[in-house]
Length: 361
Image (cartoon, rainbow, N blue to C red):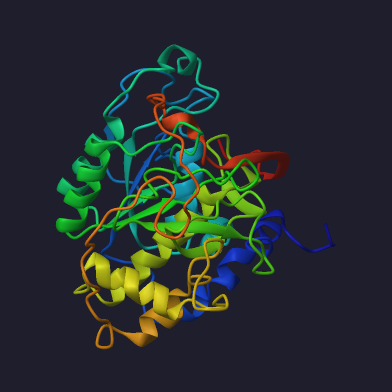
């Protein structure tokens, strides 16, 4: 570390994703005040220095497994919440992680278990309704945006009617639903749910150069892409790590949606999706691709475009599952995901600790 550079400076410098999303430009208009983002995940550490005052009272729909203070609790959810609405800490909030929408509120809903939760093997093979119930609960408790950095992209992944219906319920209530596209890009590009449900903004991952991350699933449902490689994340242990995954990409887009909703609160979920798609940058040839959707999300451009040119997209006339309308490969079906949703698109955290400030406990 260069002389005169603080550890906190080292964290902020590594948050390349904020520059990639043109957040400084977007923040001239809004930082997300007045918007609530539900994080359906493993729980959120509301005592983390970067999230204090940001986390609303939530709901635990699992009811077993690790709890606050355990190592296998709220790691993934805290990381996602930090990407969305972290606001740093310390003098001038110059330390720690800064999120895309640092003035938005987080509504935590615990619907999955951490990979390392001792209770997880006991839950394997069980089919729970936590995700569907969580989506409905979030929609009923003020969520403007619902972030789903989770999913099942196993070979046996299949649509679950309760989850599909819950997504449609949330959309009808005015909540924008964002989900990770899947981390199966090197294991067959299996369809991932809930990303594949109609109306969801499904997000693929890119690196700092705008290239598709090799692990990122390529499917017809991809709407936009966002940073998902070498992403700085906060952890309940008060350390900061580098992680990768479409989970992170989904959280970045949820933060972007929070900025757009704060700037243009009258837009419907379908209009928000259309605005993000039409203002994405680095658009692939032909206007979109299964790997990148319509390109890298750009909240500043979406805010600048404003609501007037945004058309209300035509409603879905058909629902595609399995191989989808543009890919006739046969889809696998028949298996049952675990109550933890297999964790197939959960963010994988690198073993390297970026920084730890011992005084933060």
